[in-house]
Length: 326
Image 1: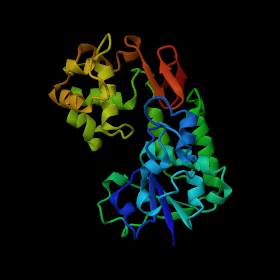
Image 2: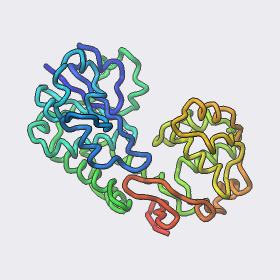
Image 3: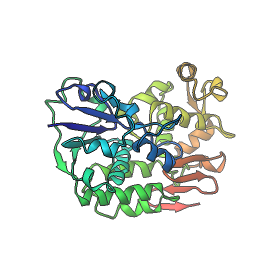
């Protein structure tokens, strides 16, 4: 049976000939920065047109594509799916992967012939932790994608793209069980909204708490997930959050290498070295935040994105098991 796999993490087993005829990785980060514009998302899944187009295209992220399907690089992803007997969706527990899944289901919901081929793997772990060579022995439950899955995906994707988080909060009271890994991811995402007490999201607060307990090096903050207990962001995104905590008008953290103030975000090697040189501690203000006696947002600019919501000091949606705007 010809099998196509769509996934948020292209592990080595997926590119073996006896596992899938074709595997496609999705590159989008929906948990950081402004959401990609609709035209960029459509360009990714659509037919590739002539001329120079800087937008990513699905063929750029397809394993074994050039070797086995040369000449078809202009096809849309939906058209290619029609050539396969089965199209499996492998998206794990990470919030970004779940957002990739709902975006993809929202797209394929408008393509009935493709929708009829879709199968969903319930991957109940992080795929990055799957050992090479073990995937064929561990087959997660496989379920059909029905109108129930499409309906949940449409609701979540449209809510997450909205200009306020209110619709996402409303979803918590609805039945999302058709996509059983989704609600925990949605709760984790909501926890990254600024807290009503401190003005910081869960990851920022956890970094301050760890620094307060003596974790002065960035390795623990960025990589020790069981210690950090948050799972939204990548290593570089943790670094950008730390930059904000240390380099504002009233910093909560001191000891972060000053070179990070001027280094381009594209200069990854230099930034990595600067993070490794840093030895962190809390300022007195940071200690007051950890004690819930100060609010970071009252003294520092806020300028980041949560889905389609642009969080600023004048548009600060807060979360504390309930949603408020200040």
